Image (tube, rainbow, N blue to C red):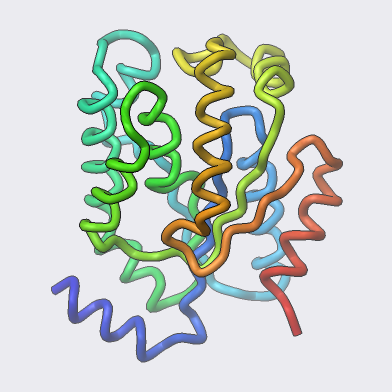
Length: 209
């Protein structure tokens, strides 16, 4: 079934645009995703939005709110299980229009490789052969600034309050960016710039004439 959907998607390449927004919390992913939604509506393009972890990922949400504990390996595979479950739906949507996602497995690698080997995570992801995005927009930000932003809005989760971990996570993103890992193109954006300036850069990438 998944193979049949993939073949149909390839036959409709004009609709096949898969965009992922990545970065630590407080980097402005949600803002840029919303701006892209507005632009696609204006251009009368059909689109579908994904966000990870999904609402069904109860164990992950309990982990983030510190109701339960998971080691890095357990968390890594819980996140991946959630993302893998959505692969058929992503293929269906790509056959109809744009897919834009707030996080993907890049977050899983970056966040769950603070103590464990990121190289092993990367090799494992490659073996899964999941759907490759056309663009990954990484909103890079000083973790201290990100923490200050989040504290204005809500209580931090287990990652948002740990500066040392956030620095390591940001370094992991930098590695994935330099590798252009598992995407047709990674684009690094300065998340501390004005949101409209950032979005102009995104538009130039996505709507090249």
